[in-house]
Image (cartoon, rainbow, N blue to C red; front, side):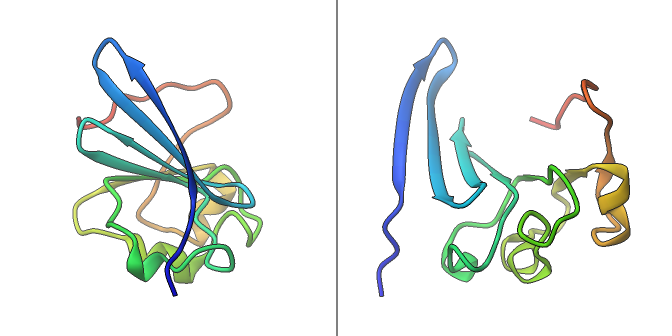
Amino acid sequence: MEQAFETDVFETAQGELAITSLGHGSLLFTFAGRRIYVDPFSRVADYSRLPKADLVLLTHEHRDHLDPAALGAIRARRRSSSAPPRARKFWTNASSFGTGSRRPSSG
């Protein structure tokens, strides 16, 4: 079964930004050859059929935003993950951040 997702594409000064809605609160940003997932949730998409993540952002620790099955399917070795402090107990290799904080990414 083919997965059909809605994607919006925006032109930026640094190139094309594609934002794909995967369902619920789950998003995939594609920019400059990088894939950034937000709140992957396996009940809305088959993440085993999607590209591996360069970066994963988790907004909070509810299971529809912090899904171990989805995280395992998109996880790539030596890639970055960021999560709120309370979510780190579920995703131990993620770095923490607080509301309004900024952190540079490796690329």
